[in-house]
Amino acid sequence: MPSETRTLDNVTTKLIACAVIVACLALGLVGLLVPLIPGLLFLVIAAAVAAKLSPAFESTLRRNATLAGYLDRTDGFVELPLGKKIQVACLLCVKMLIDGVALLVSGVMKLVKAAERA
Image (cartoon, rainbow, N blue to C red; front, side, top):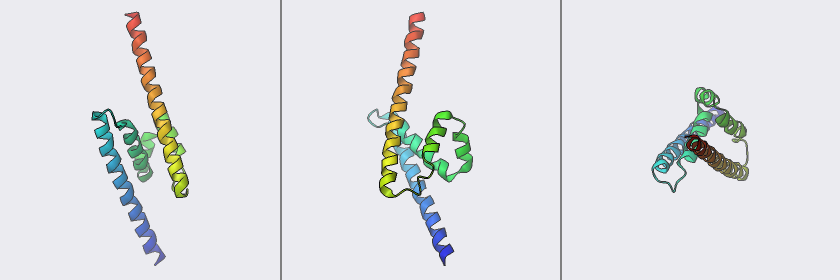
């Protein structure tokens, strides 16, 4: 009987994770079109959840140093109590937003320097 409950929990967890992935992908795609929603943030969240479900996808994501850092920060996330999960998720979202702004500023600075040379 314990193995049946364990299988059910595993299937339930995977279904919930798939629903989160689909929702984040939908919000991410809408966010790419509508500037009020941070689309890339939701796409990264979907990728992080998908990486926890698929080891092959996780190894693909780990080839990127930035994404590997986010994946490292989510290790042990499942074992945390709900309050800590919410705290970690919020802090990761803030870090992703800060990293996104830093990337944007760096790209703009490269464009400005290229324009000055021309």
